[in-house]
Image 1 (cartoon, helix red, strand yellow):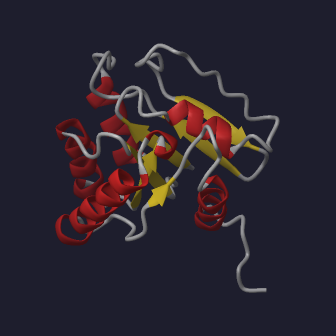
Image 2 (image 1 turned 90 degrees about the horizontal axis):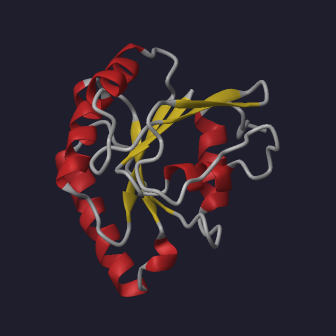
Length: 176
């Protein structure tokens, strides 16, 4: 199991749809309304693994968000990786720190994924990457040191993230 968590309107559903566009059994609906995902959505990727699309936090978050997500993250022993999505245009917000603290407290392996890179200028994106990289290196213990910068619109960075997910779920044999 891998799960995707992030603020409302960070692009979780869009990213999952882009990542698994080659897996027709993973059918992801995307709403134009921020905060539309109210419950956890589970997607089976063939017989290989399950993807969990968490409801967004912040704007229009479900009232039971903290209890629902915290319980799931704490008790799911087969959770291979949590992908924390951060909007590349605005960077890490106070609400993101709550998710980061949860991952750190429960000693969950997690990865920061910068979304919507098609909406950021190269200079702004570089600044965000450097700031977040510094944050990861100095303020986290369980965060994977490599950020992933992606666009669900242009598919930039999608292949690399797809390979990483295949690797952490045991579906990519790099030894041969």
